[in-house]
Image (cartoon, rainbow, N blue to C red; front, side, top):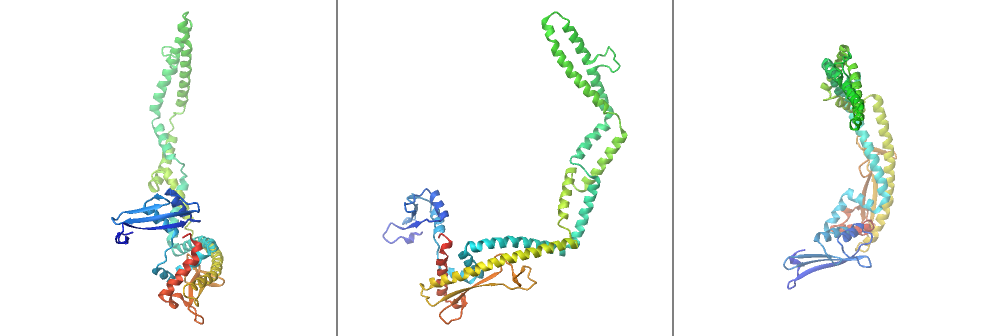
Length: 426
């Protein structure tokens, strides 16, 4: 809206419209979110005003709303037909899109199935091409991966094994110091291993304290006896565990040498493949996954080729279904457009719509055989669609951009918009 739209001598200009929302879900949601009131007949009034001072006002369903709300609503409810619209008719893709919009689900469903199979087919074709053209390079990479896996499998590391070995080596290397500490602690708890009465240990001392208390006639002292018994049980358990620990601390140079050798094997792997054993195992898993895609043997290539050919047959079946749906829709659409043009001063004009498959040579990477003929399998199917216009009785049907003037092109486009009105709520 511009101030220039305000008539001279007036304070403001406004435009108002009543819209029937019908099945336009997007428009209904915009109205609801704006808090507008919908009339009993399901319609809503929108108003836009601009005053001479440049201020703009927008209302929807009796509520003041931002101008952007009316813009969003307009996109849902209004289709604008302008002079440049007819230029879209000159693009083959747009002519095919016209049929697809008109046909609705009859084309949408087979088109989705066609695209899904085509994506899988293209992926297999690309993989087969890569394996065939890069066979030498991929074979070299596979050999390197195979060598690495063989080296790792020969060592057969376990998750976290390097950390466990480090702790074990520390324990074996310091066995004398550990034995001295554990022996001293065991003697302090259980007493001298020779049974020296002068070195009774904590258990002996607690035993003597228990005897002194239980022999007393004082009730308070006797009550402390059970608590000393609990301490004695706990110390007995600690003493037993220290004894068991000491039995495992026998010096074993052979075992230490074996563990050190195992650690050296693991270090060779971690120097080449990852920072630790867990990383080495992750590298091996990734290498196996990569090798599964590097098989360039005749058997693997033959299997891929068989899968490619099977997908091509399925793709051709979906392409045929899609073509048949478009041919049927094209006849109905042409008849409907022709009927509309009679009201646009083109009473003798007639529209024909052809649906033909695009033939290609075997060198086309997207070639697929449909009913015995090689055709181009594009993302929207194998069909080329063309609108033909017979300007009057007896005239040959020609491509619409050749048979129609600029004004006639505009009217053909308008007729198409009217016919396609059922495919959009606008």
